[in-house]
Length: 353
Ligand SMILES: [Zn+2]
Image (cartoon, rainbow, N blue to C red; front, top):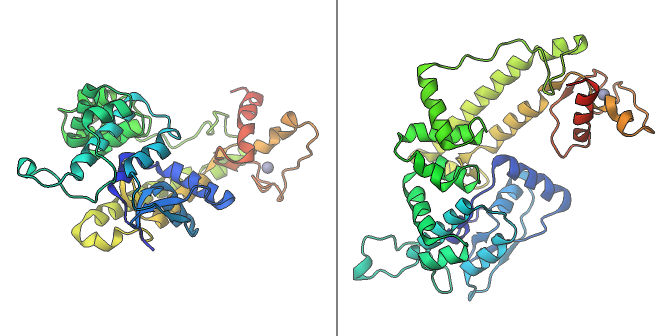
């Protein structure tokens, strides 16, 4: 089954891929607590939950809203309290609300040429100044955010929506070539740059001095602990992991490009592809990339080795039964939700790093 998305659902940003995976894991573990709300069959609230259910192959729980629902008020009510938004993020939401309003205007001689498409949102429309008040930002900021939404590359808008860049930062780089802005947004996303402006400076510097690939020997592991003899051989496979991850990212990029082309029409469907903030993606490629990233050797000693320091009563031997190292006494990457994650700080402390 594939559900269409109602325009009113798009005033709030989608989750990142990592957040979506976490949400999916949560739904799988605890069930889908909040339903996906639809209006005339289109998703009004719960795009992330819907995608997460599709990824996990869990049957989504869906509820249709009554015909007289004020959709905008409903979506604001559902989202404002559960999201902590900064000023720039609120300004983008306000700009989206004001755009939405023009999206439901009736065609009149005065607004010919404006966008009058889109289904009605129910209830009265909201002016830019009311949208500003609703989102607790100045009208001037909403006007600036509107410009960013309209003119900046999608990648830049996404970073503002994600709270990683500000409207002012996006404005500061607005005159740069679109490709440079996109590359700068990518740097902000990967936390390689703190601001878009800094990202632009880096991109320009790299154009002149290409960055060398990192060296192929690893004196230390992911925690900064010197790699111990028993783990050296395992850690020698890291370049292959990195190469595979790089190839999978390229494959994913090619897939997304293809999905945007006219011939990619049938890839642009839920159930076939995932509609992420960065465009349509293949779940299979995403999963393979996540697996490669998660399974790469990361810690030169098994994190459970320090378990007895945290839990003195615990008895533990690193044999084939050890769920983390299977007796090898080195480990793959741990995610925050894994129990042993809390031991990493202790492990660093014990090894003096
Ligand atoms: Zn172990």
